[in-house]
Image 1 (tube, rainbow, N blue to C red):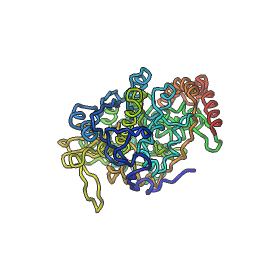
Image 2 (cartoon, rainbow, N blue to C red):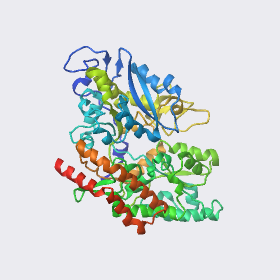
Image 3 (cartoon, one colour):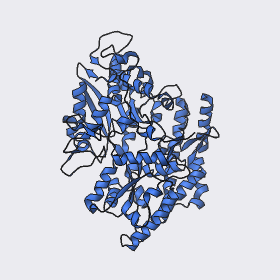
Image 4 (cartoon, helix red, strand yellow):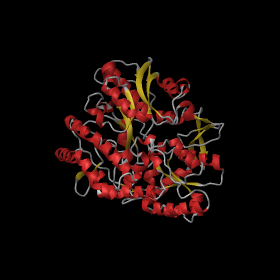
Length: 569
């Protein structure tokens, strides 16, 4: 059953429990609960983890080119502050974000993985090899994690990531409520001049309606000499280089509107596998009628010279520049980026142009793309358990619990130290976090002047590696009134779909599914982009596409997935 997105669910504040049952309530206690031996660290629910003696843990880092790690992150910023608070030195292995998953996979398979591996969206491919720890065996030692699970009743969500052995191998970011991040921004001034009220349109518009509106907007722009018939007025980001060759964010948003897993969403899906709630069985959304509808609509944007096909190959910088320069009038954005996007337009074009962040269109469903309260999370390598020993390993898990699940660490990683980069301010009688004068932050969506210091670029705060999840109050504490308004409109115009159940394969079954899925997903992605960009004809080549998927064991994946699901019920 679909749930309406009530504003209280989206925006209600919450405070984490100050403690939890079991060992986590003690400030200092044995690492091994059965051993009773003295240990050299302090921990507890909402208490600062601190090691009496210096300790080093290795950790992976996904280094994004648009805010690359610099030395000041270690000497002055994020990593220095973590060490100051905990006496834990983080030995960082940095990988480019573009191939982070592949590099992590290689490190695990070669036995060279770091102890702590964050920013993992799916752990399925790593479980069979035995290189990562079943972290559910150790959550009893994690008081902050446990408190959140109990307070927000997260067990059903965690059950969706359990494997066939009943355990889970990733410590996920956990949200009090699902939050849609990515959407689209338009040049409101140009839409208005062309005769369209975007605020009325977004209430019930579809991607087909957006297509028709863009056709008219382009006609207006051509009539005003703003572009020619051969120019594209939409050239998107997060689809090319950062889209991993699969259409990234845009195809995830559009696909989800048609009940299809595409773009970023097809990763880890074994070939677009979804669950039919009515039939109670799994099927491939990638060869469904919904998929054909999705690619037909997506292709219409390219065919009618609205969406630039370079979208699927270009860098994000190129896409940004086209929008900032006024060459395009629509572009994807998210809550962290939208303030920077508005400022980017104003820097070049002045204050005249007006941007508006919309609730993105629907397709055959009004469901948001985000359905789960879980997001990317942290894996722990077997190297840590082998090299640290049981007591030392549990000590590290106490640190991981503090870093990823405590309110204190969340605030530090996201905002920096209180009094140095931010302070509490009274706004309309409400206590809110604000950056101090002289600071801005792209990661928080807080713009500033040229002379202001970006706390993400300079010190590494508000990066994507080490903070995700938490209560709605915490995860929205940087939201501007504009973003709050966007979420209110989501609540009015969108719904949240029921989360698909999960088939839980054994190691042998998972290995077989992976062997089938990797070439299949590559094939689906190639055909999808070829259909959308017009290199393949959707009607003439559809049967060939379906056959190519079946030749790559699509039916075998569906059949095995359903077999696994029925056996586990």
